[in-house]
Length: 281
Image (cartoon, rainbow, N blue to C red; front, side, top):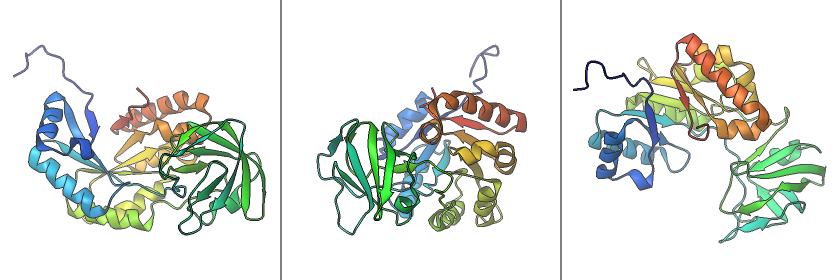
């Protein structure tokens, strides 16, 4: 037992579970080291894969809570060839709607969304992956957008593509998110994180499909719209997550420290738990 005068640890640790931490011994060691909540992302793999991982966590560390993380809408590129390519700063690249089976190249990137390319306008910023690679649209026409690489680097696989601009909207929660929410509620997970929340309505949609005993709904604040409607979202949600990485892609980087502090203060004011992602730390 802790000493009577020992400080109470009010800050808890949320640890993301993936293939590297699936083994019971690893999970037990993580719990012994201080893991309070296991985050199970659904961005990769099927809902059935995630439910199986949740059961493995419960069997290994039954006292640890489960936070299932819905992927939300995600636009990805067409795949790059094995080994990837390097996008050089100040080079030019075309963004086009990906054709079936098409590979992305260093001078031509396929976008796996039929609407995004048509929404782009000169001056729009486009981030690839976690935002380390940044493009700026300099021209459009003939079903493509021409962009200059402002910040280059290696790109491989099927990285996410994020574009700024009020014209570019993604529906959230997606129909897949709603189906997953129903399955996660039936599995009685403790909490579900909603990605790319834009308004309190998004939280209400998820709650409506979660049944009579819904899990906690954690709103991930990672869009400009969410930052602008913070009070209503926090009021509707059971908790919030400061998603610094995506905020930094969608907002000017110099604004992110101020906004993340505003999120934390607002959550405390409403008496909501707030999770800060490791990129913030």
